[in-house]
Amino acid sequence: MATKCPRCKVNLEFCFCAVMETVQTETAVDIIMHYKELALTSNSANLAPLSLPMARVHVRGLKEPEKRLDVSSIFRAGYTPIYLFPLENSRPLTREAVLELEHPIQLILPDGSWRQARKVIDREKILKTLPCFSLRNMPPSQYKLRREHFADGMSTFEAMAHALSVIEGEEKMAPLFRNFSIMVEQNLKERGQFPWKKSTAGPRR
Image (tube, rainbow, N blue to C red; front, top):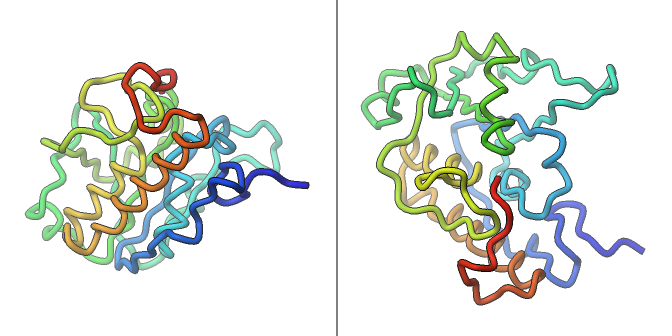
């Protein structure tokens, strides 16, 4: 008998799927996930399809030829694709920058450890043709399941939610942050680490 929820990945006792709020967006979201993250309860990208009807997760790095991801297949007809990642040449994602883009927007971002995420654009050359944006001056991360590699680091879901807040408005995206808080709390309860203490955080991403 299965003991883990196939959607939110935690033990059924701590499943939080039923209390997730969904947000209808004009913006489409596509997350490119490293295959090693797929089954991890601490992975925040798995929360995206539970929260956003317009979100999809694509798995990269699988060895079987029939399962290898063709990144060009994730682009959506009629959308303007942008890539979200803090590269050296990335532009700040601001409301002004968003208004310069043709809508609707397709937000594409990588998921995995910092090292895994950084390699995505190097290995998928088609992504280098996209406008690249990064978040600036964001509030501290509430991701308490792993130690961040950088002081201003954040989880994939938080980055997505902050980007959508810029694109479509903070008030509209408030349920995403509530969903994230529930996900973190339920994971900590499963680990026996709730209330959270800094000393109990998991390994770095």
